[in-house]
Length: 298
Image (cartoon, rainbow, N blue to C red; front, top):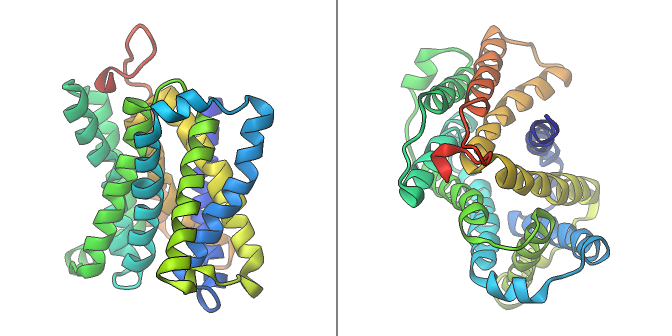
């Protein structure tokens, strides 16, 4: 139950980020926001690893390529697709496309392992996707029918694929490293890559946050350092597919935060939340192998 709580809190932090990010839009470019996000997380996590468990240099060298992929594709690729995709598409379309992440993760895990998923896992995926669609559409079929796909949607789809890769790589390709070490090293790689990009190509990435400093601190320390650590712990304990299901909580939490900020609670948000939580319960209680690893992902 502890890991379920951590993953739920990670989704809550990412939901809060959608609201907090409003304070950064007017004074900070997406590239600068990304650099500060990864840099702050790395500044905290690198010494934490050194104090808590020590850096295993031999293990880092053995896992250099997957860690590079996590940092560049999973972290930078996802954020680029997300930030620039949201500039060219609606929040409804973006949320629905991100709702495909669990299904795409299941497909990727099946291709990597050759094992077919169980019925309960498939049912959980379907309930979760239905819940996301209900929340973001307000329960209106007309809203869903009126959706038109644009260049921004393709960027969001690319971001979703990057997130799937981000979730699958640690379970399948990283060995002998803790979730804390994976988080710290991959986010450090992302921070260094963004710094090099800012110095050589796009100086706007080096912009000082200014009035958005408080928002950047929250995004970097809570929604990145802590939330990403909990995410990798979930992948290690539950497997990528079941962990990615918790992303369906993000639009639910986003809607609930909006209610707390004064918006009206809609029946569709309540129904969608029930569907998402029901999907999580069904999927996370699917049968596992004797060793505790999800059968569909071994």
